[in-house]
Length: 358
Image 1 (cartoon, helix red, strand yellow):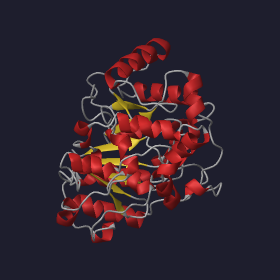
Image 2 (image 1 turned 135 degrees about the vertical axis):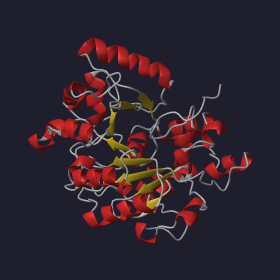
Image 3 (image 1 turned 90 degrees about the vertical axis):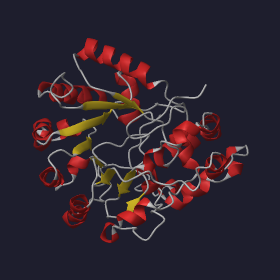
Image 4 (image 1 turned 45 degrees about the horizontal axis):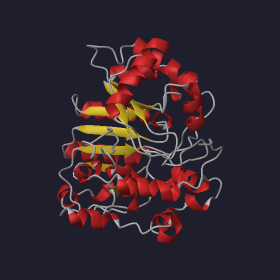
């Protein structure tokens, strides 16, 4: 998986356009076989239209700017992306948190810490609710990227922020191939800095979780086995400890879709997703209890729908119009990329969601 230099948007690549991605996903000719619509799979188990089970998690993308340009990135993030959530939009997020109950706020990007108001935002969320779970999707290297970020581990600790970090492999070659040269070494240093302030240590209450996603056109193996391997190797080689490993399937959108097409793996990968479709996973997909908020305040069913610009199918399309009842009763938008969340044991931002089928 070759590491790109610029975002698809900066390259003016046709896959930088969401409409073109959706066209590809629904083009049977490009697949070379007849792939059923995802909604027909839900209809077969009486799950269509897909409905929320509640609003529990608010996942907020505070910007697409990132210090890395990862080959698999579904956000198409990078240093050339300038979309950043303003303080005014953050205020709308805070209003939603003040007026409605969510048990988790999941902050993502890009590199969320690069938003100039990131720390203020975390402090305000913690001030609203001292017990709410705050997650930051930290790419690790941002901690080493500039002296002004070196104290992030202490900041996270002070505000009881759970750290979730992508590390696609416990080897340098595979990690750098997907995330860029030097990423593995900086990630190891950052993990050691997080361990040093208590993250991942038994009894500290400071959660440090890693995310594994495949570095090619294949599905992740079992999460429990991967976690054991990562824990054994990272402890033995670098003295690193962490809490859990989440195994996530790569969703065929944006840069990963580009990789699949360029490497001539697109049809075979979609067939793998189809053959691994798991009705049990479909019942537990993350869009059923999560709302995804874009950097500009628009509301989506999930992070992937956000990147395809598929806004929620109800009147409350923006935080300004937040209506809990309407959102809880909406029909969730599905498309062919949803096969990625329902393959095998299922995939969410928190890893597996069900038992894999035989």
